[in-house]
Image (cartoon, rainbow, N blue to C red; front, side, top):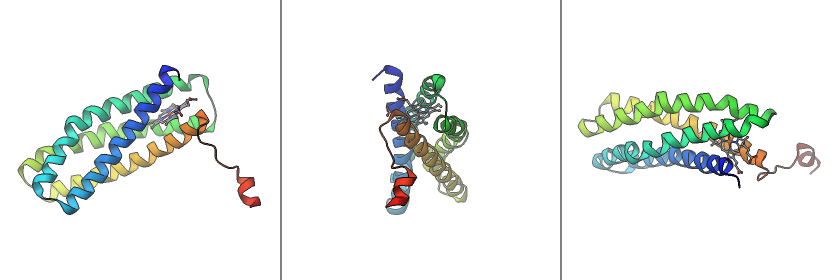
Length: 156
Ligand code: HEM
């Protein structure tokens, strides 16, 4: 596999896996574990979490636009349109939320903490959906994912 394709695949899947891990671990720890555990998780999400997530999203986006230079069509257009939302959501919402929650978790858990936590979970779910759709369309473009045509489904 050529380097840009490999970089795109690895970075795209890694970035999505990071957000899924942060999301699930946050819900599990908030629901089941102690405040100390929540506080520890919040610090792990910042370091090493964000240090993996932010470059992975940047590499996925950059290599994606590089791979898209010579391609056109519905799938690539949809991926291009989703990327600004993924990036803005990551940099303008997830990143500041993770940093603020890490700081606040060390001090106290008040209403503001849970309000920001809710915003972070919402932004995480949004990005998971958009990135999942980008993975699906990417796998379709690379030929790894082949769905049965609608006509075949109807005939069954
Ligand atoms: C975080 C966002 C993204 C994720 C998670 C993602 C994920 C993926 C995945 C998993 C593949 C399949 C790779 C393979 O099977 O080898 C792929 C392929 C592809 N992606 Fe993305 N992608 C993202 C953003 C973008 C963007 C912004 C573009 C630009 C339009 C793009 C363009 C492409 C192209 C052209 C392919 C097909 C490459 C080929 O033919 O091998 N991707 N993507």
